[in-house]
Amino acid sequence: MDKKARYRELFSNAAWNIDTLKAADEVTSRIGSNDFKLDIYKNQIEVVTSEQMLDAYSLIGLPTSYPHWKFGKSFSMNQEKYSKGYMGLSYEMVINSDPCISYNMETNTTCLMVLVIAHACQGHNAFFKGNYMFKDWTSADSIVDYMVFARDFVMRCEEEFGQDEVEHTLDACHALMSHGVDQYRRPDKRSFAQEKDRLKKLVEIKRENFNDLWRTIPHSSKEKEKTPSKANMLSEPENNILYFIEKNGQKLPAWKRELVRIVRKVAQYFYPQSQTKVMNEGFATFMHYHIVNQMQTEGYLDEGFMLEFYHHHSNVLYQPPYNSDHFSGINPYTLGFNIFMDIKRICTEPTQEDKEWFPYLIGKNWLDEVHFAMENFRDDSFILQYLSPKVMRDMKLFSIEDKFENDYYEVNAIHDGRGYKGVREALSRQYNRGTFVPNIQIESVEPEGDKIMKLVHTTDNEQVLEQKSAAEVLRCVKYLWGHQVQLDTVTLDGEKVRSYKY
Image (cartoon, rainbow, N blue to C red; front, side, top):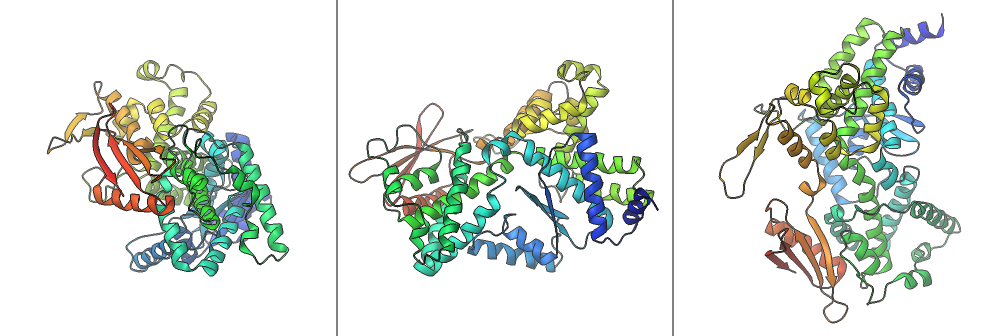
């Protein structure tokens, strides 16, 4: 029996084994590299039980994360729902790391195992390595090691200073995670290298059995030198609130400063994922669809396998209509997959409408254009650049407007000649980070006296902050900063509409 016949026999058997996984990884990797030019990290495939998958859920996909009550709460809630049949578990979960780690459910059939290996180990893996957001804002080769250090550090802090004090600090940091990200300046590549060097020093110190916790933190004379003077504490508005507090919170002891840094690093790690949900899932689905079909073309898969594959693939892409009880928004898998498929169609079979909307795609190599789109955009710009009238018609997209002064919604654009641009722009805005994360910056800090921190929230579409939540978050800022905090809500014209003080 030749190799292809042996693999075909493995993939035809509904019960998989380790040889099946090795064969699937080998074939999908070869097709991904040779036929679709995928550049990936090394793969690490883990087979997990439902309990382990629930644990991965609760840790928001970060293995070896530090302990915190919210992770336990999440695990308990998900376990309760899963045991009563109110929720299912995904077939896989993938970690942006080098090697790229994918968790596959042990209850998957052979077809599902091949599908998720093509989806996660090829599609997601290539996206993590190729998309500019992940390349510039995260460091895949150090996140797992860093989380090992973070877990160890938090646990030792709990022993040294008590669980309550550590929890209060982490609670405050978690409340500000959305404001602990470098959005406008790309983290210096050297900082990642320095982080690794710093981690190595910590490990070396640990190995030398230093019992004093604070000897593991490089905070002595050098850190004191880094503390800015009162004059240069804030030379211009700062949007990374956690970073500013970490560097300038003069009442923060060194161990709390390190906790702020840990949460800030986690927030930075997740920043690209929140910006590329549609693209990431769409590209992975696009790739598993093409890789599995190529496997069938080459004779690795039989018809029974393909029937099961199309069933699972259709389930992934199912989009409930807007008036369905199951509707919970636009399925990112569906939207992303449809746009990537449409890029291929426009390049190879353009219509007159496509020639007017996308002249830069006509006659181009579809695979090169798909890679260009995958590498150089995030969700909002991707939609604005590539969402075509055909996809809008196929998905029956329309836009509704919710004005503050009205007690009704207005349909202001539908999928027709007059509404295409309006729908596309509205959908793009929906995925813009400024739509779901308030634009808040530190405007000033009084260097003397009360040392009050003044924050400015610039409203978007006349939306003000919910008062109770704003007060809670300000309490967290004050806890970390150690002094009074004031938040002013202003319009784009600079008019103050609301003010909070804590």
